[in-house]
Length: 190
Image (tube, rainbow, N blue to C red):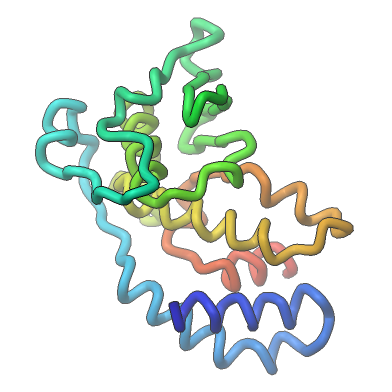
C-alpha cells in the first residue's frame, strides 16, 4: 500500500504539473524498486493450459469472478488468430493479438488482481508474449502487473487529458515488462 501511494503521489505530481520529474523521481524510483522486488517478473517457456491451471492456482479473492482461465470463454472472432473476445462480469471484452503484443480493450474496467491473472493466463495459452529479454516468455502474474500499472495511470490521469485515452487499454508487450506507472510515464514523456 505504501508503495502504491508513493507511486501515485509521484505520478500525480508529474501529470498535474505541480513539480518537476527530478522532484518526484527519487521517491517514485524508490517505490518502483520496492514494487519490482515484490512483483518480480518471472520468465519461462509457455505452459500448456492443463499444466498451468494445476501448477499455479489463482489467488482467491472475495471479489474474484473467475476460478480458471476457461471461465472467460476466450474465442477467436476473426478466424485468423488476431481478434478475440471474452466475457467478464457479464460484459464482453475485446483482445487483439499482434506479434508479441496483446491489447485488451477497456482493460481499466477489470480491477480484481486474481481475475486479471487468469485472463492473462488464457491469453498467453493462445499466444505467448516474449519477455523484455526477447528470449523468455511472460508469465500471467507479470502480465497482470503491467495491466495494473495501466489501470493506475488511468485512475491518475485527469479526464480532460488526452493521455487518459491511451491508458484505458493495456498493451502487454516485451518492452513494458516489469515497469511501474512512473517508468511507463517517463518512457512516453521522453
